Amino acid sequence: MLMLTSLSYADEETADKSMESNPPDSLEIAKVKNPFISQLPKPKIENHQPEKVNPETIKTPSPSKQENPTLPTKDPKIHPKPEIVRPPDLSITGLVWNSDMPQAIINSKILSMGDAIENAVITDINENGVEILYKGEKFKIKKEK
Image 1 (cartoon, helix red, strand yellow):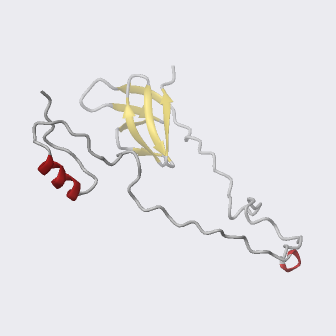
Image 2 (cartoon, rainbow, N blue to C red):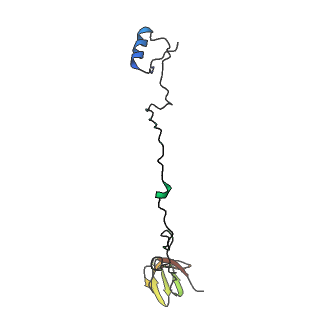
Image 3 (cartoon, rainbow, N blue to C red):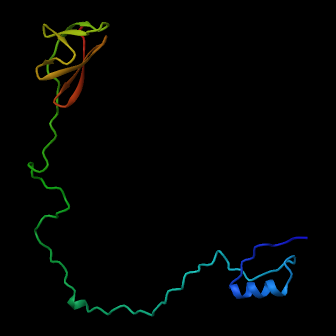
């Protein structure tokens, strides 16, 4: 026999009466709230009419010779052209890259990583050449053959 031990009733009074009149081993079908229906109160919808507007009172902007503020301006102070950064003219004539202290001969000077030449800082020395940082841009300079 199937026993239902927990029933959900719409109100507690119905549950109390049901338990008194029926023995607990019988199957009962009770009025249960549908979980898929919202239990929130329904909002009151008022019949709302839109306000009437007089077309003569609406102000329309007159065309003017002012520039559109959303369009970019041609003022070079506001929108300067990006500067093209080119690396300095460096001539690599020798590399020592497979050691504890890699070095390069650049423009007849012996330099290590972290050294600066012509406002460029050497960031890496490898078998292919030298990497430098110049005006915020990274460049790879290859060894001359």
